Amino acid sequence: MPAEADDVKRPILIILHQERSSAGRVGQILQQKGFALDIRRPALGDELPPTLEAHSGTIVFGGPMSANDEEEFVRREIDWLSVPLLENKPYLGICLGAQMLARNLGGKVAPHHEGMTEIGWYPLKATAAGKALMDWPAMVYHFHREGFDLPAGAELLATGETYPNQAFRYGENAWGIQFHGELTRAMMHRWVVHGAHRFVLPGAQIGKAHLEGRMIHDHPLRTWMENFLELIFLRGGEPAAPKRQIARNGTA
Image (cartoon, rainbow, N blue to C red; front, side, top):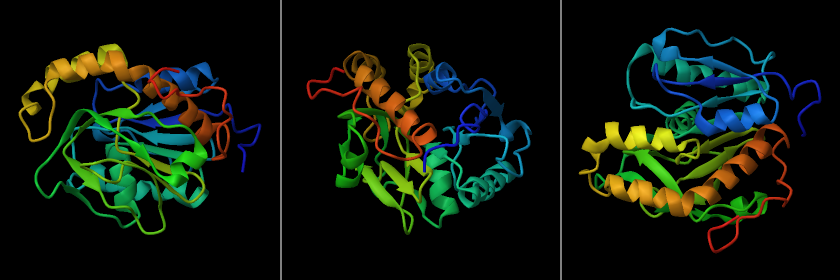
């Protein structure tokens, strides 16, 4: 169902997990579309609202912690996801946020059975259900060592070679993606510098590949991210209009 007219301009709740984290270009896109951002950091003691009546929806971003961690804020945040689910408010989980959604819905979050990671740029393949919604980029950016089982009742939208569950939808308004479409150029440079110690992990790419891959693959990813946000927060889960198509040669 399309978003109500009086609901569109309500702020979107942004949940971040580190002091210096930002909503990146996801936040920029939403602000360009007229949304204010209500930024909360539960890891630093911020409270989460008991209802989303005053919000257009919520986005939970990634972080270095695991959805399996026993820290009180992690448990509390996973439990809190029942609020957007019960109220049928638009929800987007990115990386850790998708894993938290899977945990809330009874799914398992765990490392790859052979210890493989996805740190860098990797191929993405949309399922039939995903293709029916929109065009998807051929390559996406990752920075994770765990994946999630597809929760019961969820619909798989995109898959990958190492971690098969890359994007899913649950019900009308809950969405999870394992990859990152929010990184600005400055954010990627910070991740490459501060995360360089992880480039020796199985399956990880060296920092040069991250930055070179951005020049090749980032434009289609950004185009997709904007379309996806429109789908979730402006079109009520209906297929996006084909005004921004991603060409097969990697340009938009």
